[in-house]
Length: 296
Length: 296
Image (cartoon, rainbow over all chains, first blue to last red; front, side):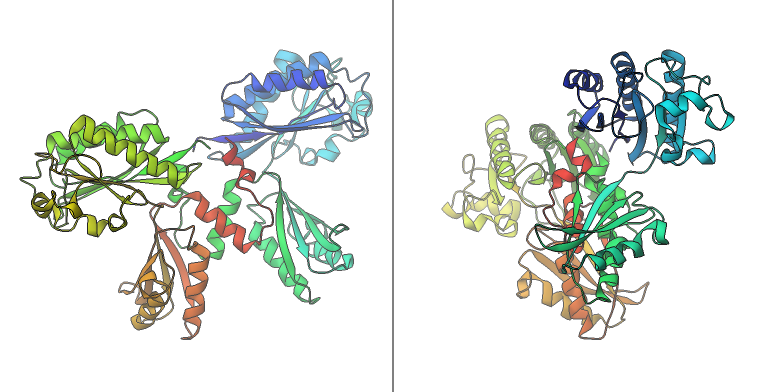
């Protein structure tokens, strides 16, 4: 397989369909880049776009989309329910296959320089691309959002990582980063007692001492009258699907509850499934090069 | 992913490196076809070549290789330890992804017609491409091998499926067919008692009433002093990896023996691993379209 990077930029426009379409067309205009998905939220006034391709092509598509967004979106006039700071709000680069996290950090730096030098948009580097520890967490980076950052950008703690300490006059400021792929994963329990799902969620979520890169909640699925542990697998390499699944099964067992099944919502990198098969089959000396499709 | 077919022709030449190289170069000459592997056996005087690509490209590569083999290999002079009947002995087409078995049967028929009409090489159609039930089994098709078929080819039971009832003057006759991908799979047992491995092999092999498309033997791995069940998974869709693995674990348990691990030898289609992950995670409503790489 060729090197593959995913990019999931968020744009501060979720209402004007023609503006969203023009941004999408910039992504589509780069040969070799595949637009996988996009969704717009009117009340958030925000769109999330997912595309993949070779590293250089993905960087080019991201650049063209940011440039178009800067032309068509004016943050001085933007209103929406989701915190935001730029016409292009965040751009994460995500290693999928044959690409390292370091490669994606390099991409984030290269794109960040382009945004400043070509478009005059200042940049925060976040998550794995962060150069300051307080910039790892996107929520902290975006604190105060557009209006607050406009006031505080000259403070040492809020200075951009790339570019001068001032917002772009329409496009604001953009966070560019690198992070592992996220897998949305749910596990269904054979119980209508949501408290059991909540207890299990607490056992596995990083914030409660569980797996560092797992976020989880216990919820009720009313249509099915069952409880569910709904999970964001933020790094399937540190907390693999099988480990989370087996831990939930074990925790459920103490309440006499069975696991009915699990579901992957949306997309998953194939490696997360290959590593699951490796675990359960107790494969010895297995290399991903043995996967026929990886040879192409 | 694009439609992907594998082809594993066997050529009746395992000694003259220059001849083998010329045949390989024919495969390499088709753009879009990827040569994955080849191996030659001097005592069998035979080479096995593996390549993949889009259906039309794979057919073209197979045709060019057969044509070259017919120029360079003379079955009248061929000697070797493995039964054989043609310069190109057998050509199976194997569906890997986004391709059905029926597509591969069509490819076999199309290539068969080309071999006869363009090169004058008669063709038996075998395995899934067989048009007569007695031609499903390659061993039956090849019965009597080159010399025997030369005598009997005009008999009703030995007539080619495509072409006249006579051998090509140098290239003999070729069997063209379609079959599922084969996965070479071993399961290691925590015992030095090979009889246990043999009993387990008999429990799972089709010929003893086990899984129809599984071949298995119990053998000793002398270097490790452990017994092993060595398996040919001839159709991972009818007998999936997880089912064979779990059955071996269950059978081993009756002898108080644990499974140490398993190994895939050589290549596997990714779908065999994805289906294994689906089983163990009890995935509900999962579609292969959710695998990111499948979207490309």
